[in-house]
View 1 (tube, one colour):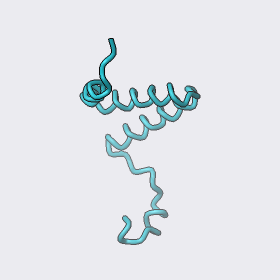
View 2 (cartoon, rainbow, N blue to C red; view 1 turned 90 degrees about the vertical axis):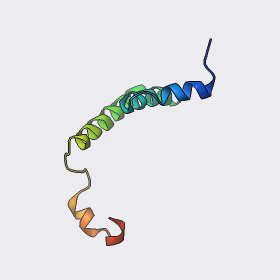
View 3 (cartoon, one colour; view 1 turned 30 degrees about the vertical axis):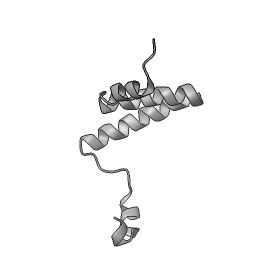
View 4 (cartoon, one colour; view 1 turned 180 degrees about the horizontal axis):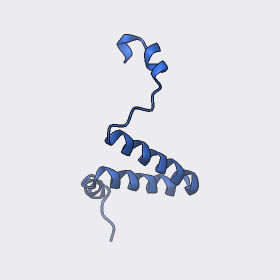
Length: 73
């Protein structure tokens, strides 16, 4: 027996952020396919999130930041 969508969504929202990302990746792959490319991007996303979580420098280059208008930083 399957859960109603609202119940399934409520249960999914109880998952950790990482598990929700993994679930979203799997759902999107089931719709759009190209699993190898999806896995490569997912690995890169996880790497970047982990780097940000430990305080690694942002991926935005300093020259790009210095060129940004003050109101958009």
